[in-house]
Length: 229
Ligand SMILES: Nc1ncnc2c1ncn2[C@@H]1O[C@H](COP(=O)(O)OP(=O)(O)OP(=O)(O)O)[C@@H](O)[C@H]1O
Image (cartoon, rainbow, N blue to C red; front, side, top):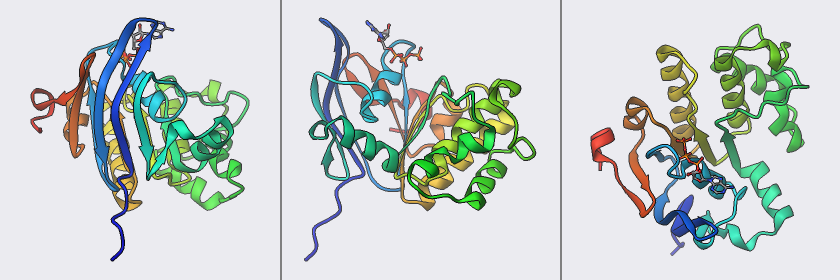
């Protein structure tokens, strides 16, 4: 008999403090392959901080984060960076698009860091986020919504098993926002990945498999936000 595969992401009793001030505590959830989770919550409650913890970019004071059986706390800085490169796609709230690289070079970056050059895949992602014809543009020649789409294409290009997205549709018109959400959810399902989506938009949360609301005391089902438990 073969053992069941571990969940793609497990978070147990996670707590984050600044000094004695708790940002959040008792955060627990599990995500399996192909699943999407929306995280909602008031401004300042710690949603971005939680995503940074899940990415191993920020520390925490209690609890465990386990990715496919690997406890993130057991990895040193170098191992964590290597893990992030291969396993993670992160759409940051502030985009973090590199100003000295073109649109196409920014999107190709995760593949390049993995030693996988794939021009066709980069072109597919440029088309998928609706940036056709802009591949040679520099970031300072783009609108906020176009920059956001560069960040999304870059997070998806290497088909990582874990996608973390911080307000990925915040700067987009409703039609483009729906298309981008389609793309994130389709890639999650087709690649057997898991998606954690931080959003203030009830329509975006409602499209995920589950919605949890982050509070300083932990996570609770956000039935009032998405109509789901
Ligand atoms: N260096 C710091 N020292 C103390 N508190 C901090 C520090 N950095 C962030 N915080 C606090 O941590 C809390 C969580 O911030 P975070 O950005 O994660 O919230 P958020 O839920 O993502 O907010 P928003 O929805 O407005 O983007 C905030 O209350 C913030 O003031």
